[in-house]
Amino acid sequence: MQAPPQVRFNDGASYETFMGVWSRDIGEQFLQWLAPPAGWRWADVGCGNGAFTELLVERCAVAEVCGIDPSPEQLAFARQRLATAPARFVEGDAMALPWPDASFDAATSALVIFFVPEPARCVAELARVVRPGGSVSTYAWDIVGGGFPFVLLQDEVARLLGLPPIWPPSADAARLEALQSLWTSAGLVDVETRVFAAERTYPSFEDWWAIAQTSRSLAPHFAAMTPAQLETLRERMRAGLSADANGAITTRGRANAVRGRVPDASARRARP
Image (cartoon, rainbow, N blue to C red; front, side, top):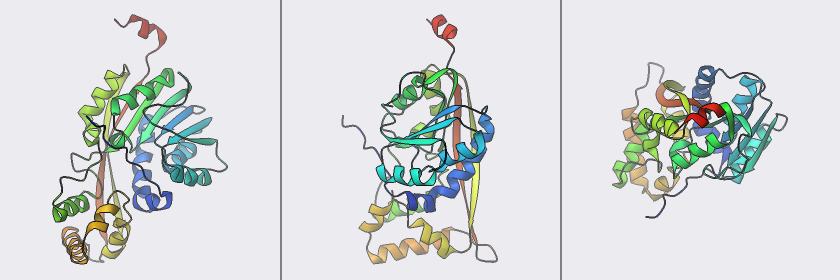
């Protein structure tokens, strides 16, 4: 069977406009939940343009963050963004991390697991590069459960073009039950899950529509539409999004999260 494609985002600025505010809101809640000690070394896997890496630096008093992503364009944005921070970045694959075993105190990924062709391999790699007792975690939009902030847009694009749901290749991996299973199957202990919610208000529908069109994952579908289809999409979205008395549009998103700990050496030896 042919492996599913690996999704890449190649424009750090566009991704920031489309998803940056959402990522930061959920990321803040996620780090409060993790409550890590200061002075840890972190691996940020699928770091993209560095939005979550920046949060780690700002909120966690890190010793260092090492980010990895398959997109050189996103990494260039991240390097510029964190030019003076204790952060370094490398191009690479979440399923084959370039670091030795037990290199970090914590490994995490933000809004990534559903893009990875083989999530179990990614989680195994996260666990491998973290020292005994260290933290392994992630959060991801609840795609299957309708938690992606632009789910209405995705659904309408698919409907207009006669397509199946426009989901990333491993959308099912972001379900709470799937995350729990991935973490326990990787040998992690003290596994816990949590759901986080966020919302964003746009001054008007026109502001929402302008940002919605910067979606890199939907760009090929927008390009495939006729002008009439694009106008139909616009009007369907206007009708589907409720505006308040001032014309502002508020949309909501929901993400599932999981955290676990690499067992210490004695626990590993005790496992059958």
